[in-house]
Structures are given as structure tokens and as C-alpha cells.
Length: 197
Image (tube, rainbow, N blue to C red; front, side):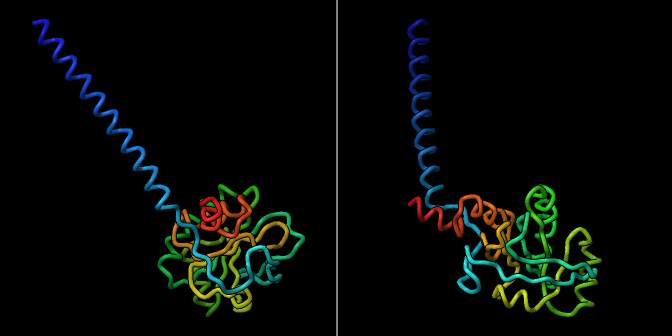
């Protein structure tokens, strides 16, 4: 009886040690995978003003008639310009994320929606999507100055009026990668990861 207990105890310890080795091997593989599949930030396009350059300064009228200053060196807060379209399904999916971001980052960030096109169509979209909390700019010149070619597109302008990050954003992670790039002082999260490698 004692021999059976000793043998079963030894087998149990052998299984526990084998499981520990397997767990360490899996943890190592997860680390390797994480390095290979790095987080994907907003996709930066090579057109328009570069990150670090002064953003073009505008003073534009919003859909509701308020005057909104875009860019400029005399800012006290950062500004996120989010370019969208009433017909873009990804843009509509990101609206709750923008609301959440506006609320959580309200201490340092102003979120401004921007687009171009038919005023009546945008006004209907503005009302239907309940976007009264956001300034909504309708300006072809703003999009052309920043070379916005695809949507949804975001440009983060720092307090100094310089572009801190920009790119196509399709998810919360890509939107937040703009804030991370600003905090790290790099053009994009990919640039930061390339520097580390």
C-alpha cells in the first residue's frame, strides 16, 4: 500500500513538472508571437503635411454656425480632426468610440468632425446620429490642405499647432495609436516599433 502511494506521488510530481515545462514553453511562444504580430496603428499615407510640420490654420463655420479654429500655434489643447462621411459604415461604427474618447480625454483634447459635400445631407446625418456634442465642419479646403483621400481619417494637432499623428482609422486601437504616437514623440506606432527593433 505504501509502495503504491509513493509511486502515485512520484507520477503526480512528474506530471506537474511536465505541465510546468509546457506552460513555460507556451509563455515563450506567446512572447514570440507578440513580437511578430505587433499592434497595428493608424495607417499613415505619405501625402499632405508631415508629422511635426505646422498644421494649416483655418477658422471655419460649423454646421450650427459656430466659428471653429483649426490648427494655429496659440492653442491650449490638442485637437483631433476626424474626417467622416454620412455614407461610410466604418465612420458610423466609430462614432460611439469618438464619444467615449471625447469624454475620457476631455482634459486635453477637442474632437472635431469634418467632411465635405452637400450641406443638407450632412445636416440630416448630424441630427440623425445625434452629433450635437461635436463641432462638425463642412469644408473642402480643410480636407484638401491635409490631403485626406480615404475615410475614416484622423489628424491629431498638438497644442503647438503642429501635426502630432495622422492616419486611416478603422478601430479604437488605431484611433488610440494616434495618442500613443503623440505621447512617445514619434510619427506612428510602427515607427516606434521599428526604432526598437
